[in-house]
Length: 134
Ligand SMILES: [Zn+2]
Image (cartoon, rainbow, N blue to C red; front, side, top):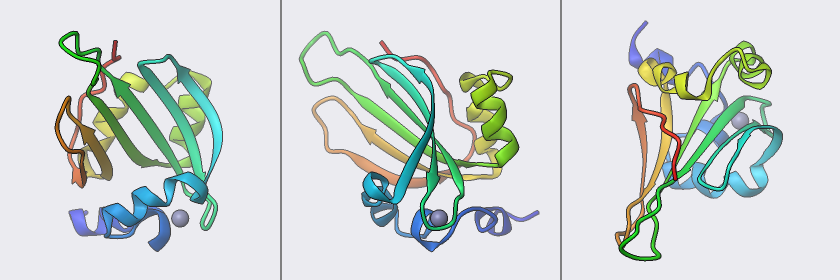
């Protein structure tokens, strides 16, 4: 399967369209929260569903304490999941720390807000590391 094919097998134009900013701006009211898998102040993992097409996504939020200032770096990764993966994640048989491997052939939205720097927002494809913040 080519990467282009892989990129279109999930979601709809509203939740998985080309425009990263549009997809990000829609996170607030375009999605319904289904399950909270991890709920720490520095690491949270939630499963959300697109209100338009019912595609499930995982939202991984990580914050790292920056002891030099109060401006802590934050990272969000939003990636579509199959229904099976979502069910396993909620049931605990799929570890949140293993989600990064699913990004190998799957486009995910990365919101990267480094300490003191401007936020960056990009669609990326490729595995990523999931670490608990703190
Ligand atoms: Zn959708």
